[in-house]
Length: 353
Image 1 (cartoon, rainbow, N blue to C red):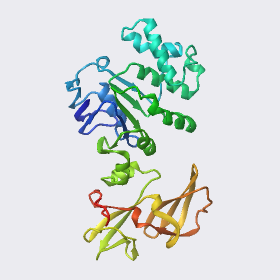
Image 2: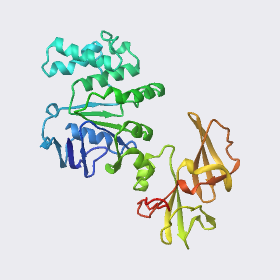
Image 3: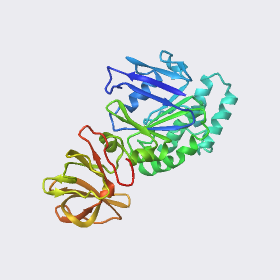
Image 4: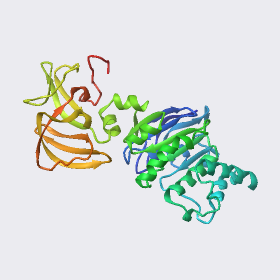
């Protein structure tokens, strides 16, 4: 178990602000946040690379806050994966085992097994420059995993790979780390889909703080704050400043918003959040198409309403011309409401949150 309490840093490009959490062995924790949210800073603080101004780090209840880097039993893989160009693939992976004091034969045997696990058993004697980008990243992952560190930290490990390689390694990742049952695995990413697919628990960071944590599906369905909803939504969620009056929901004066099934709060201002699946072609709301773009097998359309901007997503590749008018419907079952302080106040007739 890894426990961090009130981690706070200073004198860095991104600082941590009172971060506390308990991580359990055998689980994958995906840490989601935009660039600058503090994800890398957190990993570097755990590793002992960035000094703390406040806070403690405990591993199995032992305080390791002042322990030197090499004595922390941690491994860290950056998105700019680093391999030793003058060493073979086998020697790259065996290198940390040799530093642990294992003899050459044992180190090579363990390294060979790990390389077979990551699908590189046929490339043991090649140099990194003779491998593809995805294969080189697997070497870096194998070198980190072969140590069987108690804490395995992966800082956006797929970010620099092309789309196909990212998809391939994303699918393979759970299998690659399946044997690390005694390890706490921390995986940072800026991609909500990646965070939700790979983690047992998702941690959302924003401005150097942990703003939410929990099961990925639960956080997506019920984000506790507006900031959380913004970070975990891809394509982006749309926020419109609205209000409640006389038990009716309005986008703006004269523009009534659908609220069937919603339990509305007392009269006053609210933020109305629309995910792309809340908007569908054909309906009572008129908008102008601002931009149309393709994402895989879906089309994302940016819409300008009289009361604000929002994004609609439809299946398939369709042509939507910028500047054209369009009528759409807005589904109240996909609307969320946030209070002026940013808290989620969405209540529905058939649920309590």
